[in-house]
Length: 120
Ligand SMILES: [Zn+2]
Figure 1 (cartoon, helix red, strand yellow):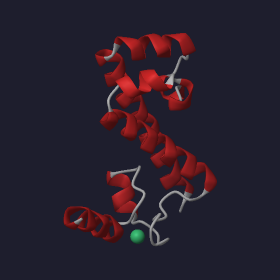
Figure 2: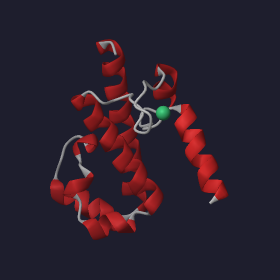
Figure 3: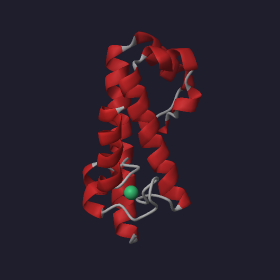
């Protein structure tokens, strides 16, 4: 993975995270209070670990999962596992990472696991 791509992904994830947090702040008073307590300048510096688990519960599963996925992808960027499929270990295409920078599986594994979920 070239460093331009990595930089671009880092910026993208940063922006996505700030967007999710921004919408949570607008919707949820408890969440806003929790973030104000942390007192960060840049929203994307807020880590979901810093936020009280119960407050995080209250923000709704969908946003919480999205936030944690974004954070996990940021961690993978740093430890070199970014863009590697968690299921088969192959490289996930850059086009897919561009579209969904927090993808953990390649398209094949993703559709296989979705197919399994429907049948089970
Ligand atoms: Zn795969």
